[in-house]
Amino acid sequence: MTHQIKTLQDYKETYQKSIQNPEAFWAEQAESFQWQKKWDKVLEWDFRNPNINWFIGGKMNITENCLDRHLETRGDQTAILWEPNDPNQPHKTYSYKELHAEVCRTANALKANGIGKGDRVCFYMPMVPELAIGVLACARIGAIHSVVFAGFSASALADRIKDATCKMVICSDYNHRGAKNIPVKKVVDDALSMDCPSIETVLVHKNTGGDIAWNSLDKWWHEEVDHQSPDCPAEQMDSEDILFILYTSGSTGKPKGVVHTCGGYMVYTCFSFKNVFQYHDNDVYWCTADIGWITGHSYIVYGPLLAGATTMMFEGVPTYPDAGRFWEVCDKHKVNQFYTAPTAIRALMAKGDKYVDKYDLSTLKVIGSVGEPINQEAWDWYNEKVGKGNSPIVDTWWQTETGGILITPLPGITDTKPCYASYPMPGIQLELVDTAGNIIEGNGVEGLLCIKYPWPSILRTTYGDHERCRQVYFSTFEDKYFTGDGARRDEEGRYRIIGRVDDVINVSGHRMGTAEVENAINEHPAVVESAVVGYPHEIKGQGIYAYVIPQDTIKDEPAFEKEVRDLVAKVIGPIAKPDQIQIVPGLPKTRSGKIMRRILRKVASGDVSQLGDISTLLNPEIVEAVKAGAKVKLVG
Ligand code: WTA
Image 1: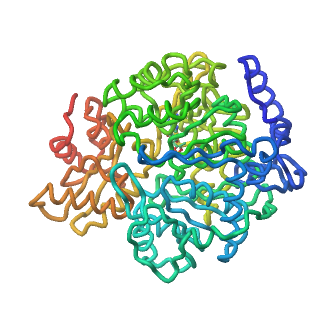
Image 2: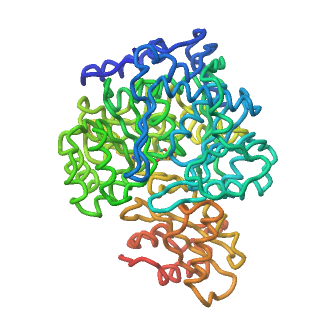
Image 3: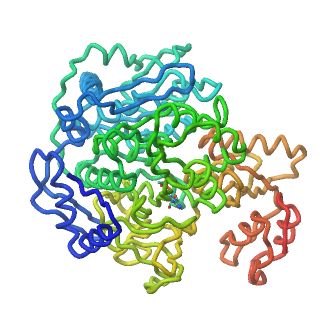
C-alpha cells in the first residue's frame, strides 16, 4: 500500500527517510503497484543534460493500476461521478467495472482508427466523462494524449496539434457552459483549416446534438466506440515511455509541451493524492479544475483512480445557475474533499454569504487551493464559510512541470497558516537561492525557489525541444531545477509562494506568458509595439495590462481597444484578453533597447512611489507620458 502519513511524527520520519535514501523510499512506494516487470534500478539522473529516469527497466501500464487492479476489490464502487452543467439534468456514475469496459471499448476504437503506441492524440473537449475515458484509452494502448483546454482559440489549438504532430483530434459537437452552448467542433474545423496535415481522424462526441458541419475526416464517437469489445489488453509500457504532453506558457512566446512519463508519474500522483487529501474508502472527492490543465490530469483522473477513489467531474461553472452551485453540489453528493482555485473562492466570496450559508457542508473534511497564491481574505472566508473552521485548508503549490503537489500542509497532521503552502512533501528537497545562485540558509528568509533532487513526477523534457527544457529549468542555477517562483521561508520553516519572477503572469490561476499576449497584440496592423505586464486584480489575482504603441493617432480608442481584445481572443483565447489597454507614445527602454518592465509593472499596479533610477534610460521622458495615461489611479 502507498504509505499514508497519519501523524506529525510520521511526517517528520517519512520526510527524513525520503531524503536520506530517496531510492529506497520511492522503491517502497512503487512496490504497491502492478508491474508487468519490476524495475532494475530506481533512479539515474543528471540535471545538467537533463536526463532523469525513474524505475529503469520497469514495465507497466498505468491503466491497469487505475482500473484492472481495483476490479476485484472495488469493481462496483463509483470511480467517476459526473455532475452536469444543468442541475436539472441527472448526474451519471461509472463504477470501476463500467469505466474499465468503456476505456477498453474506446481503446479498441482508437486502434481500429490506426492509433498505436507512441501516436499523439489531441483532445479538445468539455468536462464530460468521455474526456477522462478517452485519455485513459490512449494510456491503455500507449498513445500519448495532449489535452488542450477547450477555451483556447483555433489558432492556439492548431499550434499545439502541429507541435506534437497529432494523428487524431477528439472533440465534442458543442460544450455546455452555464447558459451558453459553445461550438467546440467549429473551433476544431477552423484549426484544421490552418494546415494540420498530420490529422487523419476527427472523432466527434455528440454532446448537445446541435448542428455541425461534417467533413471528410470526421467520425462519430458512438459509431466508432459503442460496438467495440469491452476488453482490450493493456500495452506494455516502459516506465520512461511518454504518458502525455501538456502545453504550458513560459516567458518566451511559444507554449511548450511538458512531457511526463508513465512510471514516476504514476507513483507520485497516487502518493501525493492519498496524503494531501487524506482520502479514505467511501469518501467522495471533488476537484473543480478542468482536465485541460495539469490539476485535472493529476488530481481528477490519475491520482484519484490510482488510489481507488470516487472522483467527481463537474461540467459546469461556479456561478450557474447561481453562485451557490459549488456548495449545492457538495451538499448533494456529500463531498468529503473539495479542491478549487483562489480565483473561484474570491469570485464566490464577492457574491455574498447567502449562497454558501444555505447548504449543508458538514461532510467536508479537507478543502484545498491551487494555482496561485491565496490571499488572507479569501483564505479566511474559505476557512470560516466553507470549512466551518474545522476542515483544514491545503494550499498546494506545484506546477505543470512538477506533475504533482510538492509543497502543502497535510490536513490534520501539519499546521496551517494563511497564505502559506507550508511544508515540502516527502522526497522534495527545496532550496532558496539568490540571483547569483548562492544558497540562502536559515529561516525567516526570501529567495528564488529551486529543487535540488529529482522526484518521480518531474518533467522529463519539452516535446521536440530538449534544449529548451534544459535552458528554461536547469540552466539558471547549476544542478538545480528552477521553478520560476520566488518564495519566503518563515521562522518555522514554512514556505510562502510570492509569485513568478519571470515574465509569466497568473490570471485566474491560468498561466500566461506575457510574450504570447504581446505577439498576439502585435498582429494588429495598427500596432507598432506592445508590452504586457500583470497587475493586482481583486478576483483574478493578476489582471493583464497591455501598453500599446500605435502607428498613428487612434481616433476611436474604445473601438481600437475592442479590436485588440478580439484579436487576442482569436489568437490565444478569451482567457488572454487584456483587462486594461493603455495607448502610449513609447515604452521605457534601457540603452541596449530592453523594455524596462519594472517601471511598467509599477505604473500598472498604481504604485509609483519607488520607480528607481530612470536617468539611465534611453528615453526617460517617456515615463511621464506613461504615468499620465495610466488606466489605474497612481499613488506615490
Ligand atoms: C503558481 C498549477 C502560489 C506558481 C498546478 C506556479 C501557486 C504556477 C500555487 C504553476 C500556490 C501554483 N500558491 N502560487 N498554492 N500553485 N502556483 O503550471 O506561480 O498551471 O509556478 O500549475 O502557478 O502553474 P501551473
